Image (cartoon, rainbow, N blue to C red; front, side):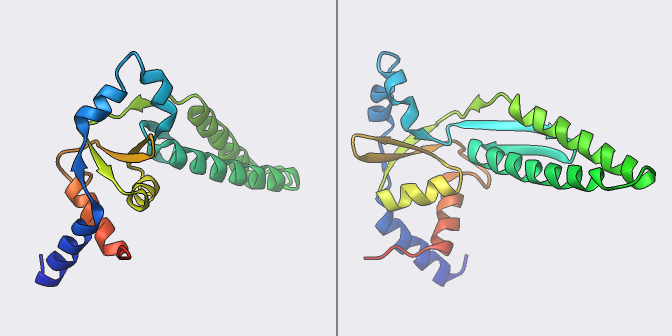
Length: 173
């Protein structure tokens, strides 16, 4: 890593207030109180769906965006099919329409899985919003925001996420 990039990353970390809060969050999410706080966790559920165009993996927000896109394409193709005379083009359109309907059905019936949280870090409000946009798990409780670390290695590891964020934004003092 270049010296300038390292300096930017270190400056970013100084403003990010990353403090391990795993124990306190585990107490808050104790099975006795767990249900009360589940609605305060963003991006906790993850989907893996095998669509006709390939595998779609992501949080509910991404899945909903894809569903909306497919619905728009389906409406367009159905409108085009209604004015197309019988033949090869109509047959191709009908195949596309059937494929899109099948994909929508898969999305609507998809079952999510809970993401395993390795640890929770206390983060400032501004960072929680950026992490949520990036699809990271964020828990809000009693005015505090906690980032749920879901990967300890690879490109989704917390250091990689922070490095990517530090390149995109610069916190204001």
